[in-house]
Image (tube, rainbow, N blue to C red; front, side):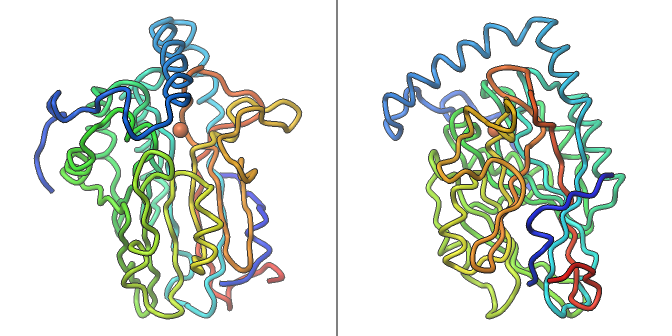
Length: 317
Ligand SMILES: [Fe+2]
């Protein structure tokens, strides 16, 4: 495992059984909730994706990208909360299983994550890529993900795009041991320490409600929020959220001399750590790809967030 030294490091702080959704529960398309221009762009993106995703070359390119998967470690100071010291959160996002990433490969990745013994595992959305039936490829991988403090998820825009009934999506995940935190949270406790883990629905394709997600947290309690799109961060910072974990950008997926032509963020939150008035954002480069099975200048990533109590912190916070 390599140790990342993001900007975050420099700051102190702080079951059910349901099969694939029935066809009538899948999303109608185009959606009345999305701008027409966006529907048109997405239509052509899906067309490209589906035109090439059965080609052996496409799968070879994706394997080559995935061979560079990096496990990064991100420390987060949580003040004088000794019981939380060393707690590790594995954050998997943007799996995009289906087109280029098959079930067996994803299962291997999940088993690898579990072998590294995280205390809890979080999924940041975009579990499927471009077909509703891809959700079935998550069966084995989701069942393999186990951690002492649980496994949690929020949906991404691709999940909304391909699964019409997010209740069915939630049922599918929860029947496989994954608790969905869309606009809600829960307390994670270890010894006498605790933090509020919450999540919001997708920014563009869901119905995010950050205020609801924070109902229940105690005054001064460290807060970790899962939000598929990093552009939730300014709002989260306004609510005093300590750390937002996002994906969505794929680190730009194609980065030329450090520049990402297509980044899917209005605020420049392409990858890595950001800070705003004591709140922090970490944007993972994610696991999979979409449209093209390519990554240029940006490796796939699974970050492990490691909570550091003040007495154990080594950086000059
Ligand atoms: Fe994605």
